Amino acid sequence: MKENEIETDKEIEILVVEKQAAPVPEHTYNGEDWISDIKIRGETVLAAAYDGTLTLWDAGEQEVLFQIVCGRDATKADPLKCCTFLQEKEDVLYFVAGGLDSDLSVWKWDKNRLSKPKPMYSLR
Image (cartoon, rainbow, N blue to C red; front, side, top):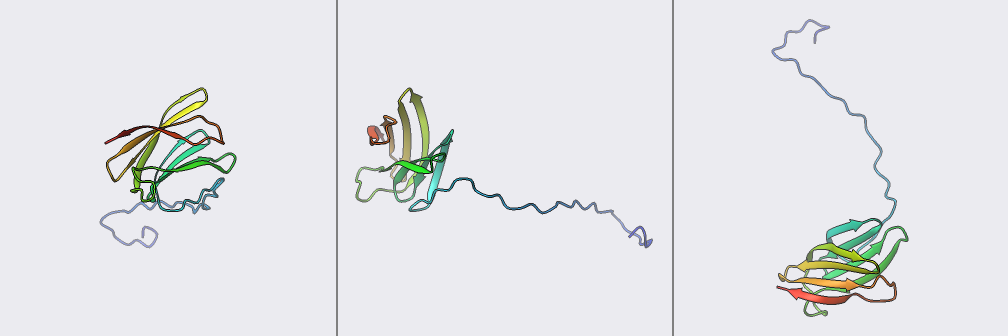
């Protein structure tokens, strides 16, 4: 507009951002249902899902360490909405999951790939 001597009331500054390539995932995990929450500690991923399952996934090894159904009735668990790591002591991992049924369940896992997590508390 300046080069052609066209009058303007305001000048507009245009910022040009160059296109970048889409990120390429290094590790992937496909859940059975929609994932509602994830928490990450190192290469360990805790994922809560709408089918009521809580999954611990080792991203480095690309392996599911365990998958449990949280809820009072394991045959028809309510959707989970949140999860988090609580504490890690030597060979024990503590974590919690919360669902639409207003329950929080606290779990303990012995960090042995052959063992299943054990429920400690159910809080309503």
